[in-house]
Image (cartoon, rainbow, N blue to C red; front, side, top):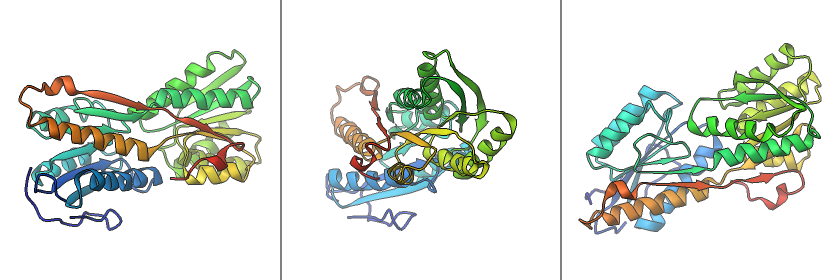
Amino acid sequence: MRTSKAICGLLLFIGCVLSPWSQAGVVAGISVSDLTNPYFVTMVRSLRDELQTTFGDDVRLLVRSSAYNHPRQVRQLEEFVAEKVDLIFLVASDEYKIGPAVKNIVSQGTPIFAIDVRASGATATITTDNMQAGEIACEGLASGLKTQGNILIINGPQVSSVIERVEGCKLALKQYPHLVVISDSLNGTASIEGGLESMAYALQAYSQIDGVFAINDRTALGAEQAIVQANANTLIMSVDGSPAARDALIQKRKSWLGTATQFPDAMSKEAVKIAAHWLESQDDVDVDVDEMRTEVLIPTKLMTPNNAQSFTAW
């Protein structure tokens, strides 16, 4: 392990702490998609706490946000290598485009653990079971619509998590011949503003929209604003389980049917557990690193107005 003094991270809320891991401090980097999204803020906080629990207090965590910009994320990974990090955690801006950079860094001995989104060539992958999330969300949407009506899918950035949620949703809806997907091409950019803009456009473009599947809660919250403004009778199902969506469900706001809940704490804990095992294995000359590659899928649960109180907010 590299020896280094604890240096505070880039963001004040991440903090830094001092640790006895083989008498040296572990240095880690994490690049996420969007630090304006509470989901990723929770993920980073959980990762920091789990690193401290696992390795002790002398942990240095560098935090970057790619804003879904691929060249920017490549530069961030290169910066982590220049900082001589021991571990990199990555929420990829693009599963395949990031592959060459990931493979190059991993080949030089620095492991990269893909979390939330797959990254080609990563040492390990830990994500929500996004196919299952899309399936249970759209099963719930079908039930809420009594298996008939027009459905709008508000898509998002084409990362693996979003692609798989939409695939899972469509798979669930195929069972119901009287449910029609009128569009899946609108990109709500995974944001409130994007959800509002996409929904406002769709309400003008289509005469009847009975249900919406939004790829995350921020998109859904924006869509809700447009639905309220148009006084439309449209039901929403989403993915995330964010505090804002939980509040909407507890308040039984008119449009909200539910959200397939993600568990960023569980994802971070699993990622650090796998990373720690990887570090320990480096002392074993008989270990085949390629054979250690693994993928962990964390299942989701459907949050509805009937059970939202029982879920713990991020």
